Image 1 (cartoon, rainbow, N blue to C red):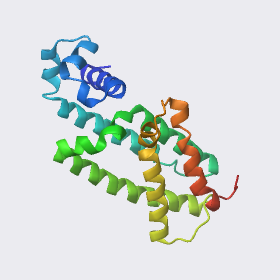
Image 2 (image 1 turned 30 degrees about the vertical axis):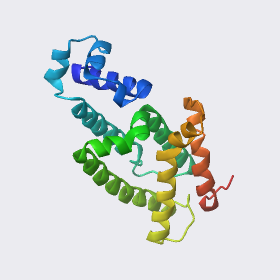
Image 3 (image 1 turned 180 degrees about the vertical axis):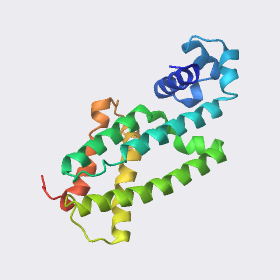
Length: 195
């Protein structure tokens, strides 16, 4: 792992544990066992670190939503993607707790995320279309209906952690992944093998 990766990994860990507002670049440098000067050589500010983390996160999400070519999709492929998605949501949970305040503090970050979201929703429409073509999902090929279904799943996935924490629950990874069951509740009427 190179120095930049170590800084980013350390920052994610600290942000998840304490929140972005309570973590300074000095905290990140100390936890990464380096001098603040070394950290500043790679990143000029905490917001630059956050931007780099989001780019890594977006790249990892691209891998989650890329389906295998030349393979007939089955329900297990959808199950795997949902689990991988929730793994990433958990790994970058600080972002989902604090997205609004991060975007209010950094317009460039908000614009970057908005563009990614639009791209991702379009990709996910193609994703759903492929599951329909392979007979896993059974629904009308109505783009508006598909968009509403995806938006519902997106809202649940991205806000599940905040919902739990606002209700006073101490959330661990297993409890967080209960959100997958909510998404299955939305998808079940459209599945080939309804469970």
